Length: 212
Image (tube, rainbow, N blue to C red; front, side, top):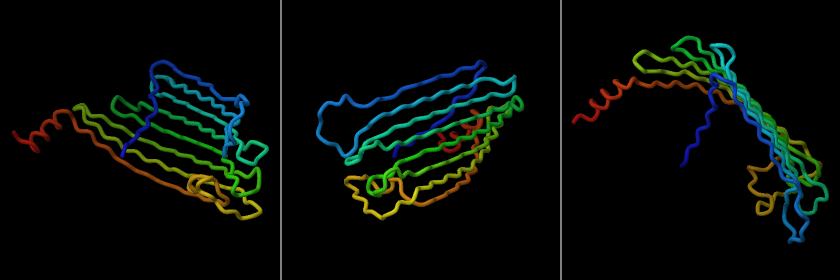
């Protein structure tokens, strides 16, 4: 299947940034057939700033906040949800050959329960934090290698209702995507190494593997 790789922009010689604000208010009130759920409002704000800190350090800061609310069939009040995220990255040019990068990402979200759980106002709070570091070294020949590692820790905590209910998948959607009562935690640690050969070494390797 398709593979999507996300990378953060590297700080340049001058500070640069961006700011985005958008949103959607309620509908026009035109008569329409009753829906299972409808959007009441949606708002989002995001910013990015990156630039140098002296001659050897670079800093990247990026954040986003978004909130929305929707009506479900039979409810008089909208159910709000929100997500907030912050990313910070520090680059250190230790020498002409060595670069060290530190990255930290935090996210917090609040998801309302489906109406299948009965009690109004219940929600699931999710929090996640990811920290990583990498060391890149380049040789005079053009070859380079990178060592990296990271740790991820996430927690989901849903408020307990007063009565059990049954989920109807056709109305409520896939069960794996729904907020549910209870608490769950998960952690993950990763280490990786990458080697990139010099251009001459690549040509020689190809000649040995595929001789003409």
